[in-house]
Amino acid sequence: MKKLRHLFILLTGAFMINSCSDFLEVSPQGTISDEELNSPENIDGLIISAYAMLGNDHYSVPNMLWPWGDLRGGDAYKGGDGPADIAIYHAMEVFSTIQPDMSAYAPSALGDLNNKKWERLYTSISRTNNALARLNEMEDGEYARKTERTAEMRFLRAHYYFDLKILYKQIPWIDENASAADIEVISNTEFTSDQLWGKIAADLAFAADNLPASQSEVGRPNKFTAKAYLAKVLLYQAYEQNETHEVVNINQPLLEQVVTLVDEVIASGKFGLEGDFADPFLWENENGPESVWAIQRSHDDGTNTGNIDYSAMLNSPMSLEFGCCWFHIPSQNLVNAYKTDVNGLPLFDTYNDADLDLGTNTVDPRLDHTVAQPGKPWKYETSIIYTEADWARQPGIYGPYSSLKENVSPNCDCFERLPPFMSSSKNTILMRYADVLLWKAEALIELGRQNEALPIINDIRNRAKSSTTLLVDNLGNDLSDYSIEPYTSTGWTQEYARQALRWERRLELSMEGHRFFDLVRWGVASETLGEYFQMEKNKREYLSTAGFVKGKHEYLPIPQQQINLSNGRYQQNNGYN
Image 1 (cartoon, rainbow, N blue to C red):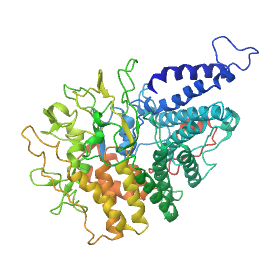
Image 2 (cartoon, one colour; image 1 turned 30 degrees about the vertical axis):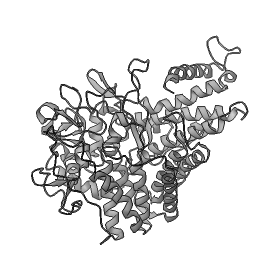
Image 3 (cartoon, rainbow, N blue to C red; image 1 turned 90 degrees about the vertical axis):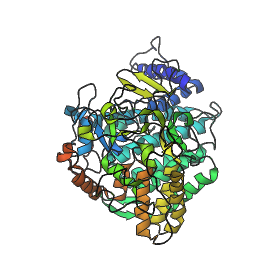
Image 4 (cartoon, helix red, strand yellow; image 1 turned 180 degrees about the vertical axis):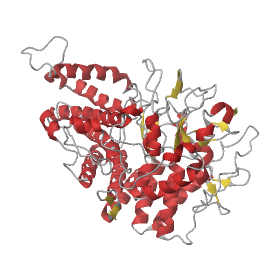
């Protein structure tokens, strides 16, 4: 797939040139006609062009959702050189300055992050629609894999629309049948929120019905990847919201479908939990059993820089081994959440009463897999010690930590240096099997079947308990005092199970871009972030202006530029008028 990337760029460019030449009576030399494009080889090129948008991202508008999911969810601070360093990320973190037109928050090279994310996602959708329109014109006999490739494109389109939906809520739906004239009159309120979820789900249901059980080329989704993604969409759809984003009902039949779909994914045997929590985040283990779907990265592939991870390009620390730029910094609140009690269970009510003290507190081992801390090895390299003085850029503003999951060792063969930035060819996991299992557990709890959710949550906790082999210093001593135990059935009520599930999602999936969207789905963003800011303002002065407005900040504003381009047909989200 990677070898075909340059072919796609040429084909897409040729198609765009040709589409602008309709006024000519003869085809100009050097262009490709519609008839010539409608061939299996060229349609394959358009398909890979749609896939390419997954990896062709940039640190100013990453496809890994850390700026939207972690900065806004209380798991991470922006980091960097201070609030003015990519100020638009600062705006995302503090909420109070988010507005429909955010072009003033970044230099022209970075632009309006809010608008750029919208544009890139719709560009991605345009590529899937282009491929789908061409596929629809082909006879089955002309293109042997027509149905399968159609399923892949509908899966990709659903993914791009899913990101749009959780970011903006009310979005225009554009498919391969929409003409240019249609697009000019489409509104973002043509369909209700529930209907939009239904359209995304329909694409994934088609993909699940028509994709093969296995793919010979990594990066292409299979039937069970689609079933997993469909389960995710139905889980989100089940939490029905009103116009001010309050959860007014939890749809039980949809939750039942979530359970059924995840059971089918489990029964497939295609995926599984890795033996050690470290494994999914190590380059040498990429595309392992826990990777349900991932962006396939590369370097040394014949291009100038390879398809490296631009999403995490800002997130390396400031040490000599790296050099820039120390974004995506774990919050003190997140670090404190890993503390455990005498029974090895979370401190739900008191975790944030005092900051973590490794001399007295026991912790969940996932802390040391997720957060780089002073005095401890970097990414399991006992000869490379993380220090606040040499690795943290502005600890006085953002604290002493760094993010580990997306980063790599400088000794990794995947490491790529593009001065002043650093990155790697390590894949970006978009869907992890542990996440899928927790969707089932969540659905079961909301269905009142919390006893069935208990072993699922405990499987994940037991994996964490056994994940200490790499968490040692050069003498083989544990890096922290680890204590984590599974839950017992005693007192396992629906309310307690819900609290445990939500805590488990945070500990297991932190710094992977999910937290804020979980809070919005559950309808608890306002209260959770209100408590977060109340405490964090006393520790991080730059958060003094932060504030979350209920009924507004659950979603981003529709970019003002898009409203202008629609001639006012797009309606602004609640609270931003």
